[in-house]
Length: 214
Image (cartoon, rainbow, N blue to C red; front, side, top):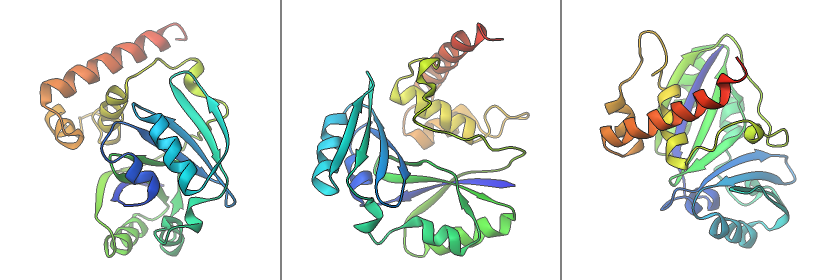
């Protein structure tokens, strides 16, 4: 099985809400409504924007982040519904969709890597698309916002999480390394020393949190 991560520039309400801040949205679509997990520095503005766009049915304060259930599914309001392209190319969406820095980040699985190429050609015909990473997988882990990992995961800042995930997705922890801290810094949009600082802090917090369980 093969996995690719695509970053798609978008003017959808969720992407627009994250365009000029460090707020991040994770979305699980349930056809009739969306479940959103929101974290970052402009959460109230994002919730207000979502409420004015599709409506908010329920909201939960989780300390440093928020979970909300919308009145309707955003795909009913937009014509950039990514799932139809994924289905047409024979790929599978790996939830959740992620919105950050004015873009939609999509993780996709395919049994045949050629299907990922087909999907890229399809969506890049209408959208500004960047391939963030590609890799072959031996297993796929499920994720859910209900059984939250926040109970045992350390409290990473938005930037620490972004740098760490970028490093992981681009093969920084593979042997040999698939990327450098300079390349990670360029993707995130910060200096190399700043990226290295955030990466070390994230690694320190994660190591401290998990050491007790080893």
